[in-house]
Length: 53
Image 1 (cartoon, rainbow, N blue to C red):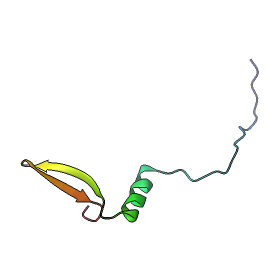
Image 2: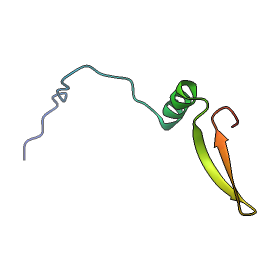
Image 3: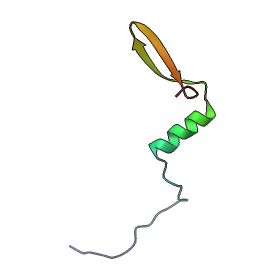
Image 4: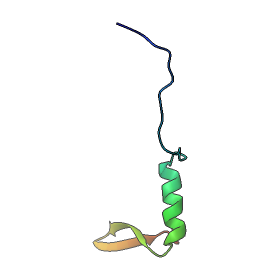
């Protein structure tokens, strides 16, 4: 077995890593009135939007 100390070659431009939190923030900024969650409360569906949360 041969071991080398070469750096891995990365092609293309490097983009910053996106996190779940950054994606959620972007969605909330782009569509604040969008329904993001529905919950049944005593048999009635309640809708939550980015604005309301």
